[in-house]
Image (cartoon, rainbow, N blue to C red; front, side, top):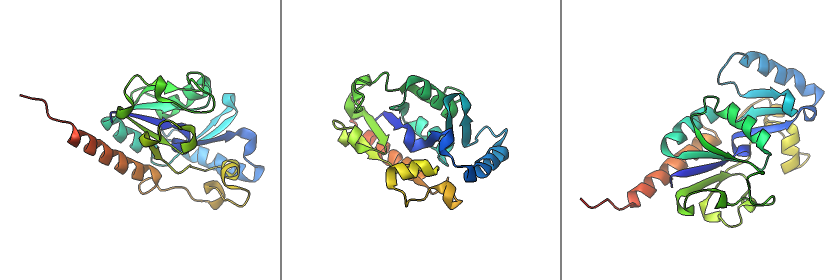
Length: 202
């Protein structure tokens, strides 16, 4: 494979501003203060989008390394304005992503398809946390565990008893977490693919 399509929820976690309870606001505001001025900050308050967005630890390193192996694309079921904002956060210099696909570009609002990709399916890897939205491309999919920094997010997916990283007072490891595992898998897939490509005749 030469192209990798990344679903935004595998790289970050976003919730509405009012989804963060008052008891947690001092914590997130403290994180914002600590990260102020850091070009690799992980927490963003997007007032104009009414969102808190937390990047997954290790995302910058993951994208830099993956971009050396693959052409990267973002594929989100969010609208084009959200997609553009996320791309700007993840890739402020505009060097790592070849394209951004939003719900506005997709041929279906219920499922994702590679008909928007201008390459053969065999050349594509998909990283997504929801396999059901790829009914026609299961063989291309690497299923990734969802990242739940915010309580509202983990409650939606796992129920009322589940705890988020914010509530636990910890975060995923940037060196031994999910994205580092995904990078190892991508490297193995890349190596296996090009090992099987026949050499050109002299």
